[in-house]
Every structure is written in structure tokens, then in C-alpha cells.
Image 1: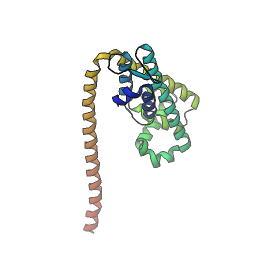
Image 2: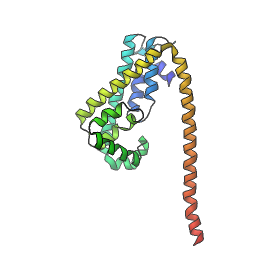
Image 3: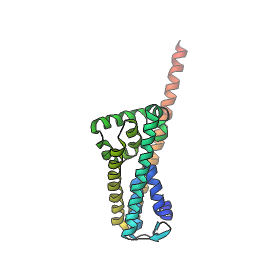
Image 4: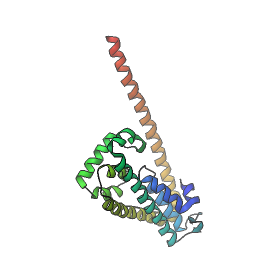
Length: 214
């Protein structure tokens, strides 16, 4: 991902943040590394529409690319929710990692916070990728939804890009730390896969035993 960002600059940030609006794409890492690139402390420079740049202008370009990309991706997610509705998500929610339990939690979230659920979700790690489609399903008004999403996205992108700008030359330390996160994610995926396989085997063996006892 960092190599992709280094070579494609604002377009990479724009695309990855658009994806992150409906599917987790490590937005923290995207904006953090984008800010570090903009600071000029790394060997690569930010590709700003074909021109390598560093400095405050590059920082603003990175942050705005992330905010605009996320906003457009959020509008696409909202449209999916509006036009597909809950029946669509009950059939295909696994594509977006939206299980029925997550939909129930999202519904509770929206009933509790109403329109402000959008803003709170936009500045909450992980949850921010699971707000767009449920917002459409549960009838969030487009005008307020767009405004609150834009506000949360700008805060998120400028904050993380600013943190990357501040880290600058310390990026190598941060990058090594994220490798340990990668290892933890891989271990978690393997453990989850093993659990699901065992659970599936148990669910298939129990009916067989019941049949044999008859």
C-alpha cells in the first residue's frame, strides 16, 4: 500500500479513501503515510497530478484528496442502502462485511443518535467503514448526511495527515510498528478461520449422530 501511495500520490489516496467508505481500507495508514510523504522527510515525493511535490501545498492536496474520495464513496454507499434496502443487504451484506448482527447494531446506533450517528461514525475507527450503507437503509436525509460526512471526513483526513506530517523522518519506526499489526491481523484471520471450520464440522456431525441414534 505504501508503495502504491508513493507512486500514485493523490489519486491513490482518493481511490483508497473512496473504498474505505464502504469497506475497511486502512484509512489511518493511508492518511498517515500521505502526510509523511508531503512533509518531504522521505525519499519519495507526493505525486500531485503528475508533478512531484512536498510542503504545505502537498499536505493540503493529500488531505483534500482523502476527504473528497471518502465523501464520494460514502454517497455511493448511501445510494446502495437507499435503493437496495435491507432485503438487499440481508442477501448480499457479506460483500460489505455487513452481517445481520451488524445491521441490528447500526439500526440501534441510528435510533439513538439520529443524524449525528453519521458524524460520530465518521470519526470512529473501523465503524466509519460500516456507516454509509446502513445510513441509506435507515433513511438518513441526503443533505444532512452529506454535510456531516464531509465534516467528519475533513477532520479525520487532516488529523491523520497532520500526524504523518509531524512524524516525518520517524516514519521508519512507525512502519515497523505497523508490521506487527499486520502479523496480529494474519494470526487473527487464521484463528477465526480455524474456529469457523471447527464450528461447521461440529454442526454437521451432531445431526449425523442424532440420525444414527434413531
